[in-house]
Amino acid sequence: MGRIRFYFALWAAKLSVVALKITRHNGTNFPGVVALRLCPDFLKYIQKPERIVGVTGTNGKTTATNMARDMLANMGVNALCNSTGSNIATGISTAFISGVGLSGKCRYDTAVLEIDERSAKNLFPYFAPDYLLVMNLSRDSIMRNGHPEYIRDFLTTYIPKSTKVILNADDLIASSVSPDNQRFFYGISRMEGDRTEVPNLISDLQICPRCSGKLKYEYIRYSNIGRAYCPDCGYTAPEYDGGASSVDLENMKFRYTLYQGVHSQGATTSDGPGAGEAVDSLEFPVMNASVFNIYNQVAEISLFHVMGYSLEEIRKAMDGVGITKSRLGTEQVGDKTVINFLCKEKNAYAASRVFERIHQIDGDKEILMYNSCIGDTHHWSENVCWMYDADFEFLADDRIKQIVVYGDRGLDLKFRMLLAGVDESVITYVEKPEEGIDKLKLFPNDNIYILYGTDSFDLGMKTRRQVIDHIKACEGNDGTGKEDGR
Image 1 (cartoon, one colour):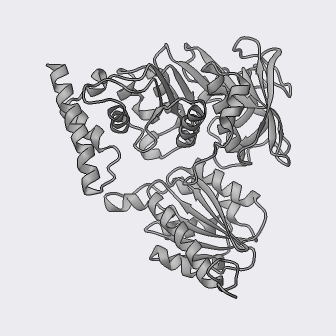
Image 2 (cartoon, rainbow, N blue to C red):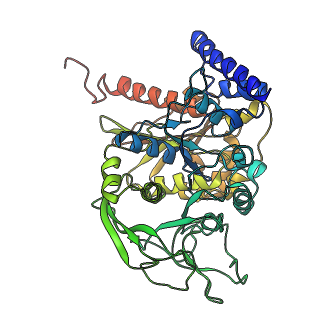
């Protein structure tokens, strides 16, 4: 009876795909919604690819999933992926539905799946990823995820014991996931500009998990990301099985090294925290100068190594692969630069990374801040405590000439920035997003940042196009300040 119900659900889901195309609706996870409504244990019966790669964690999942898919494509592997759907049960069901025919036979050998941390409970009873990359675990929406240590324990409970787990050793919360599994630890050795004191409002792990003493850092990048150790009991972060060193941002390159040895918790405080002798090493180009994205790249290299590929194969597969432009994109229009940045609302950690990156980049700039929980306003009100965990203090910068805020939380954002020391004359509130474009000063060599969240993703992409058109209209059809034909 269960299998008959499964086929009925599969055919209904397939029919819904046709209906969506005819009616020109997106509905990226709707087929999965249909399938699970008709057959709650649909994931138990649907045939899956032989090799399943999972990507989870608080931030960077989509970027890492798309990179893995594109790298596999460069290797000649056409992988099933849920990049066009959601990362919960309905979206993953939709991906599996797209990978099978009406008979239920799977057409793919490999799947790369972005997996929401909280969905582990609903997914892993039905399939076990062969490899699971845990990007990081940090503070997220308090109304949904609570504290990152809760998410760590949640993942540890539900990740299958057969899954090989790839973990960031520089994140003591993420690196303690699934201690009974086969684990591979990666990280980034000391970089120029590293600090020893936490520079951010959020530092989710300050107490030694072994003796409850206060942790210290050999070096730290942001929040609790760096080489932590306890001076009282000698506890330290896991040694690297593979990692980046000699990061050269001037020449945009680093060296990735694999180490021989066992996964250990030694008490070393050396500059090169490898677990043993170097067994292989290769230089890679830096894809993006943001430290957060360097971690994303090192995570991908580590994942593909664990999957059995050589460093040479991995570097070749990375050629031409980049960060999805919808997450981070730059376009030059005359002497103006338009930068779109995904800046998750309700996620102080992610927002802080964006604010800090804007602060680090040279030049005068304007910001359209359209990441104010727009999607929540239709049905509920999000707790605004995330704004007081985020490092808005990075925006108290004389080089930022204007910040435009919009949405029902726009004035909350303005108030938070005033508390952070941003001059009130710099902040402009608008009731409609298009009004923000008209407020742009468009001074010479202007850098215009468009910030949007997951709720306002479509608005962000639309605003980006409108800003580019506005610059061209103001300065000439080609954006150079000269009219065509002159």
